[in-house]
Amino acid sequence: MSDRPFLTREQRYAKAVFNKIEPFIKRPESDRKKYGSLAHKLPVLIRTAGLAQALAFVQARNDEQTPQRQLLRDLADVLRENGALAKDADLVAQSRLAAFDEYMRLTEAALQALLWFKRFAQSELKVQAGEE
Image: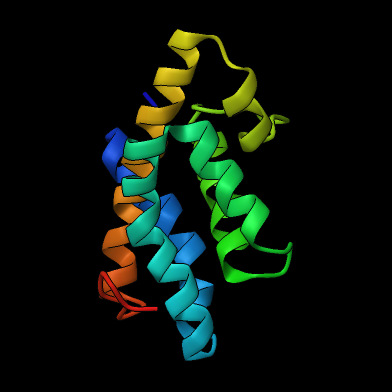
């Protein structure tokens, strides 16, 4: 018997996402708002445009050092930690190259993780939907 407790997928996502959001709690308000605002918007963008287009859109509109790009990196890390993305895979590239069934699983995993990013953006970063 393992000494590690069994965690549900939701608990694993919650724990991994909180670890990613926690450093933003002490960041300037403008960074928190940019990060948190995208946490609210990205699930809607994925549902309307699709995973590949949504990720490419965010990547193209923001340079490497922005809080929005950090959210993409954090999302990829959470998906890797939870087995939804291969350890060495790039999330944006994988979303473009994946076969249909893998693309659908990756989309579902991203939406599940983003639900926790959104929840913690509200509770920890104090960013509500529509703020920017």
